[in-house]
Image (tube, rainbow, N blue to C red; front, side, top):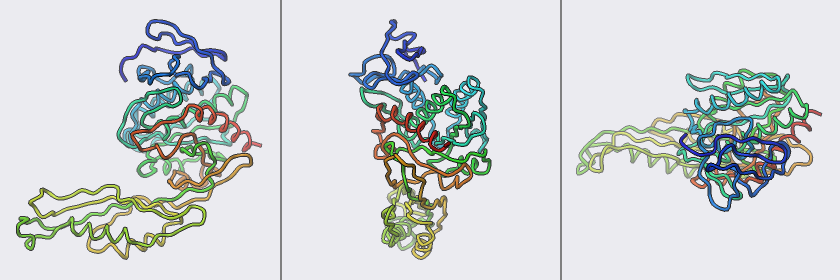
Length: 396
């Protein structure tokens, strides 16, 4: 992360004062609890009529407000498989919080240079959890009057910030027996959740964070991810009869997959198919001797019938099942607006290992994974209070 004039921020209940902003101190009024920031003011202490560049020299610390923390986390690139730096940053942050409020923080090893981050205060009854990895490509944070932008802003760096602030405010109010769990690998194969499921810590309830616009999801679709590989024989393209096109084979199978009948659920809706990547061949004038594709099917059931359908139509090429996650029905709580989501989460992988699962987070899934990824500042502020309310309800 490279140069910016903002060094640190001192936060109180009524104002915060950046240590340096363009050579001058500036103070802005705050309006939300301990260190909360009024919507319409920026994370850097300047009214946000214009888009602001990233305060990229700032590492997360306990003096930040939620907008600053979100931007600092966005500016740490953590594309799946490259989460190590993000994990270290988060571990240092929750360790500081654990030290201040008599808690415990640890790294939970998953793979070489990949680990989950766990912190707790007492024996966790409720654990707030989300993933730390993002999809590619990385792009840094910026903000305007109403939104924070950048890769992971809503999926899920803003959610991490809101969870940390919710736990922090609960601790300030004397609440104990809560935990934070941040896992790697959700965007690819849920490897972090698989590792966490084998190492539970006694939590009775799990609040999983994904962008649901702060609505409590009552169900989420599952996932069946496949890799298809076709082999062939090279030849001069002027004499195709001398070769065997792997691309032709692959396209024929993909066409059959697209025609497969898919399951429909009265709550979750219909299953969907996405052919996400295709590659292969050597050159335009060479009959292709190899081709591969990745297919992602969103499930509305346990996936058994869809797997059988795939087995029927895939002929003459290799198919490998990378991931199978069943659709799930989720817990509800009185007083919360509900929704149904079409995406897949780590929840089916966790099972009941970390307690009964609930799914809620700020941000819209419609801008996640896009070059317009962003999160509303108002939703971030709202999420802090919603998470606190959920924790309190689940504890009583």
